[in-house]
Structure formats: structure tokens, C-alpha cells
Amino acid sequence: MTGRPPLRISVVVPARDEEDRLPRCLASLAAQTRPADEVLVVDNASGDGTARVAAAAGARVLHEPELGIWPAAAAGYDAATGDVIARVDADTVLPPDWLARVEALLAEDPGCAAVTGPGRFRLGPLGGWLAHRLYMRPYFVLGGLALGGSPVFGSACAVRRSAWRAARADVHRDHDVHDDLDLSFHLPRGSVRYDRSLAVSISARPLRSPGGMLRRLARGWRSVVLHWPEQAPWRAAARRWDARRATGSPRGRPR
Image 1 (tube, rainbow, N blue to C red):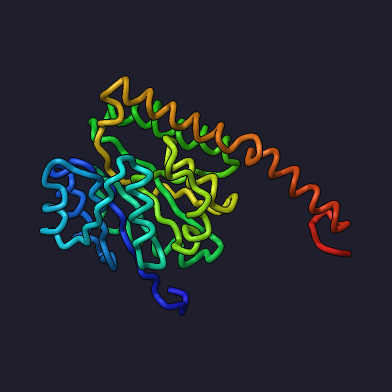
Image 2 (cartoon, rainbow, N blue to C red):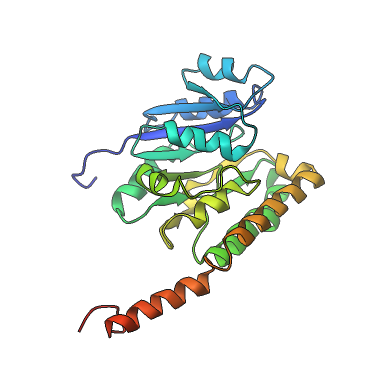
């Protein structure tokens, strides 16, 4: 690709009571044209055979007793050894070239901290079209406005391990927040690249429970409130403007 050494990719799959959905996810990882260097399934205090299914598929199994998607995901990120930490969910089904695309996108842009794509709900043509416009697109549009850049989408994203290590002490893993948005606030502004070629197939379970939808919205709002106004886009723009004025140059370079 570029003469640089190949990137090692770890894939983290947080899972709680996912023995029915997990096999399809792990099978899609096993079918990648560019294999993962390691697959870590984080068993989040499951009461079923999630850990057994993961181990049988050859994944490295971690156990996180503290309930919650952030504790489970963060445990996987902390344990990952790759240069890149890809994150998918137990209901994610990946196209065969997904990891190859992740590697290519990050290799061609060393300044990019993370790449992400959308989820395509398994609802049929009309249902999937509606869900994308009423759920997926608003997430990226509203999240982008709140952040001043693209958010990551946890079912289909990959973050450089160096970026995670820089952010890990500041993320709110012990709060009831939206983990994807929370992580996005702690990545360098403008360093997340959205690419439609990273689209994955996901189940429609977020849409099936009104209570679950309300909890997701509440976590998203809580995530924004927790970081605003200090990390609001206009504050960042004001700081950049102040820095440029301090250097005496519109482009931020000393004269």
C-alpha cells in the first residue's frame, strides 16, 4: 500500500446474553479477506452461553462484571494489542472486505484517528430505508453538529490504539452515557472519517422498544450536556481564533 508496515487490527465485540446473535457476527469476521489479528469478545456478565460460543469460534474471551456497554467496550479496548481497535456489536454482520477497507483508509491518512460507517437495518427495502432516514442519518447529522465533526458509530468503527490510549483516562466509562458519542468527544476534533463503504448489517432491535429508544436518546443528550459548553464546536473555534491572533497570523503561523 504505502511501504509502511501493515497495521495490526484487534476487533472488540462487547456482548451480554448474545449466544443467538454472536455466531453470525463471528462468522462474518472469520470470512474477512483481511483477517483480524485478534478478536476479543467481552462477556458482560451474561447469563447464557455467550462466552462458550465466543471461545468455540476462537475468540479471546474477557469477562467484565460491571454491567453496561461502556465498561464492557472499554475493557476490550484496554486489552487490545493491535495498532487499530475495531469495534462491532454482537448483532453486526460485516461484509467480507470490511477490515481491508478499514486498514486502507487508516493507512492512507496517518492523521486520521478513527474511521466509521453506518449500520443498515435488516428490515427489508422499505423498512431499512425509513430506519436509515429516521434513526441512522439523524445520529450522524445531530452528532456531527454537537461535535463539530463526525461521531463514531459503535457497530461499525475502528480507532487507532494510540488515540484510545490518549482518551481512555478522560472518557466517562462509569457514567450512564452514550459510549459512541462520549468517545467521539475525546478524539481530536475533525479526526474521525465517515465512509459509506464501511456500512455493516445490524439488527433492528434498537427500534423495537419505545423504552429502549428513550433510554438511548437520554444517554445521547446526557453525553452532550456532560461535554458542553466547554467542548462545544463554537468554543473550539473561538480557541483556534485566539491562537491565531496570538501568533499574529491568520493561518496561525508566526510572521
